Length: 307
Image (spheres, one colour):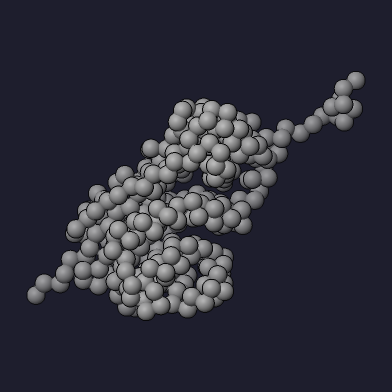
């Protein structure tokens, strides 16, 4: 008699893992005032994933902000600030003579962001709880920045127009987002490519725009901004870099309920408990480089007041 038969029927590990992921993300899908679902939510697992993601695109973000012209002494608004990663980076770029206000609707995320700034003595960076679709500022800003925010919005140009009201004449609007269209492995690794496809289809099914990075400049142009520029930054994660599998598997785990519920893949195919290990193993076996989604940026300036 085999060992398994003496223990009785064993649970399907992939389904157990899926249901654990689903329970830990009961708040994952919530409706915005735009009527579109914000797919990833703000539970503790997702906040930890956001920390890892922010670290992986910090260099690209800094490059794009500097290219756009964010400089010392500016007063800057950070839309959808979350844990404050971009707000704190902006705080470094504007220096103590500048100021940064981070805006987000998640009180839990802002609690973390405020504590981190307090611990780092970054008194020129502050946070406000509010909805990016409706919040209004009492004073104008020199720059408005939004990273990974238009991705989740039904009418991104409307949000840009709304926040142009918060810019002084000649002020700078900067948007940074993903374009998953260029994500791939070289050479091909079927499991990693499947995971990338699951992620893109899940975002689309939930109403997000995973390729919006390619359209940022056209969105800004629709709002009447001038002097528009756009640039994409592509990472190349080497076969032995654990970040590659960690980042991809992390998004798959966060989206697992959507992936399974929408029939994009089965719980057995996803198997959230082993997905990271399997992707890492296949990347190393193929000696493959993972190209994650391109970090795209676009920026433009508000027109001067004419008399």
